[in-house]
Image 1 (cartoon, rainbow, N blue to C red):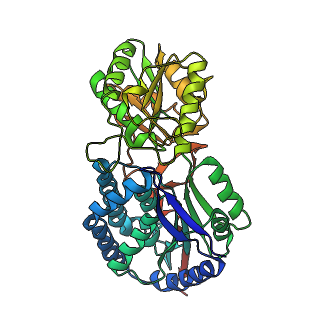
Image 2 (cartoon, helix red, strand yellow):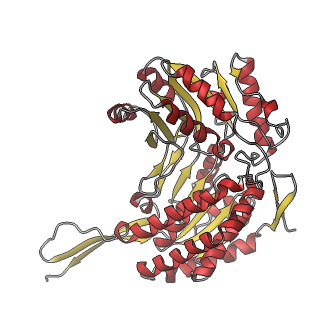
Image 3 (cartoon, rainbow, N blue to C red):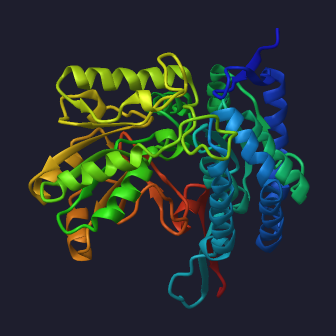
Length: 463
């Protein structure tokens, strides 16, 4: 019997997309096609791969309006913000395409008489990419484009919340002239995804999702000697030092907390403010948050859409209720946001003060529009609290002293350290995390390493 996968739109609770889940025979056929196609694709010169993938990027930009509308209905991103995802996809894809020749070039050791020696980076083979719904194009492109540029075949399994994004990738590569079988999108159940990961024909897995999902990926791949890249989210902190530019910090930290309705693995989830700026920061943060417009994401005036699922919104509401019961103060009146209601995906943003690390909202990933603000008296106290987390994806320091940011950054357990910005991936830098935020990296020249393996050539020329 065929399993039907349904996407429930957070906009109105309707079924927006229905797709049949691929059965075992379909997955088998896809794997066979990928293996066969990869043998030919790996022989295609890098400049030709670059040309094809640049044409795929053109497809996304040509269809930006329709994609933005689809995003709103699938996961609640306001149409006023959805186009930024395609802009980010373009930036990341083009950077990884442009640096491929250098990143994949042979490594030449010092000359040795009578020998030709070099290390060549060769593709691993078939790459399985499992992408989430919250930034469905940005998270997927981190793996898809460099995997293809490196000469691999790709099987993309997207979240059940955003199946049209996988289909858009397939359409882009078909329009660009990518040979059949080199990229395939599969709609899979969780059980089928685990079987795919365990299959001997899959040579690398790139997963973005929850910690529990990361453990499931590791277990599924454990019978093989392959690598897995795991980006598993975070509880990212911001520290506003006494010398920070207050207005700039308020505007950007609050945007980092509430953009995409707080559904960002590198969004700001906890804020530490030096006591000298604390009152002014809280006042500014509350005033700015009250200006958000919660509503229908297909309305161009909305800048805060629903969460992707009503159950996720209720989870965050539970964190807030527990914190208030334990002594925290909620500074935003949800009644000022007309569509906020228990059991609804529409949720008002919330700022909590008088919080501490005994509260779930300060230690457990929220992935929603809530942030706690704590007063600190020193850099040392801020660093201690920033490190008091099971996660370590990004951290930001807001200061006018670059030296201080670098000094403190050495002590902060994180994959990326920001100064005076947050919630952004620079494609020239490695995207990585520590602790429960996962392992491995994407983007930058280093992002090609896991998608290739070194092969050494040792040729004796004088005999």
